[in-house]
Length: 429
Image (cartoon, rainbow, N blue to C red; front, side, top):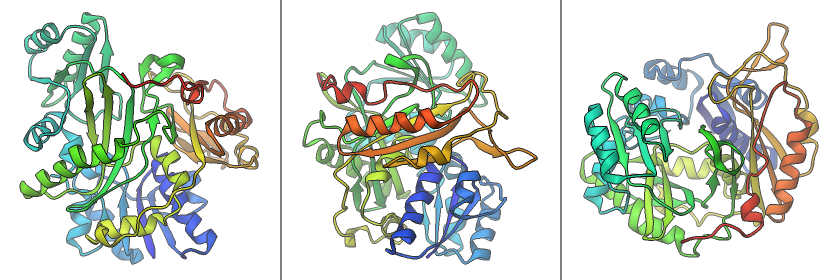
């Protein structure tokens, strides 16, 4: 197929990497295009300089290259309705409509849908001024959970024991245009990410993964877009995927269809395994980064078949998904100052050395080219080092051996990705 992937980050590089792997293995021969892409993606696909938020421009590009499938990766273009423009032109597109993407674009809307669908989630108050935020904080008590209602690139959530910090974050969210805040009860227990692909009717779950949002070891420091991930989750209940499918994903997809806004794409279900049972933490309308990088590394079923079946409304015809038995660990290499003031423009070396290691590949997240053509950092999360191994211990060892090959002045990374799981220390209340 001719496939166009929209986006610039490691999520999109992971998608392109999986599609390219099909060509390399002889499973299928694809002509890959990306807009606007990044230097890593450019090694596997033809790059086009198009604004990913401009639905008209993306549609024109899809028609120009003769795309038989368009994959919209990030949340911002989805919420902006880019998939609607492409779909209206008759081109199969993987990604929900702008209306359906409100499941991520508005946390209050997601809560409304969950309530209507009977989906178990945290109790919450939607606040429109500082007095309401203060009252909600006092109603729930610590730990305080305060979320920006809109898109915040994975960094709009504060979980803290400090009421002043919680209130300050709430006020900062309210300062945004049409600012609203969701204050929730705190959910104990480990969190899990499960991607559920849907064509608006049928839902097909992938394998669960766990990511690490805090910047520092032992979940210390500020929230980030994610510092690493791993799969499988040997500590999770054996019926977890079935439970999420029947109690969360399928009812949500049915509720969206009932509202006249069918959800076609991937519903990212973030859940907490609490002492009171499974609870939804959040919905996203796209693959999660960095979890998708580990998940796709284990996928045997051609990704193109899954994406196209969802885009064409034919997921019910898909054969059961096949997975590699190995474990996968992803470690994010971040630039100096991330997540506050990330430094950019520093030279990057060692990627080829890392990829020469067994079971390791490197995905670009925030990279660019200097005037002379050298690879440099261009964002906060710069690279993702992904490794497969016979078990978590081997996957971790290979991933960190790969990270050690990377040269980036001032960079930092967590050293404990999947460590507690490897040691058997993750428990469900």
